[in-house]
Length: 234
Image (tube, rainbow, N blue to C red):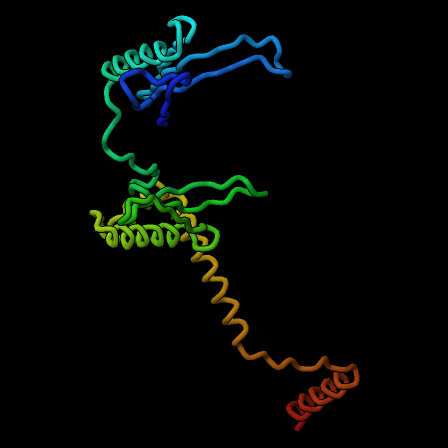
């Protein structure tokens, strides 16, 4: 953040200066906090590699705000000179697929966890963009493929180096082989059941003979006896 200070607010005589890593602190007692100690001065803060550096320069210690600010400037410049510069390379998007900008994540905000493929890229204007594909909707392999294809097209459009989508897709599947094997097995079982159901539906129904009545059974038995008598006695 940059601040411009002047006069009583603390501008040093040398003119306007950039207050990177320097913040003005003004605290007074209030109705809610009547016992709070008055605090006025400049706070220097910097962070590198997760470690925070901080020091406060009180107006009272340096006689006035301008002198405290000059001391803060000196400390800030010395501090930044002693700390390694922040990395100049852009941060790579987090990934658990082996493909930069592509990851499988889990949404836990609903009644049941849901998996989705998250993708991130930077467009031609330098703006970070994102998208996602639901595993419930597309299946894991199709969601990964959609993500790889989207990354390929968007990075190609932005003029950035990019691998072919099938190369990214092959690498993205490797960490999730167990899930993919189970998914393929479930798809094959669903196809088998669908085929069996379709075959059963298309098979013509066999005409079932009506149940034989007692009277018909007597007639049939009599006919068999008659045929047997004819064979025996002519």
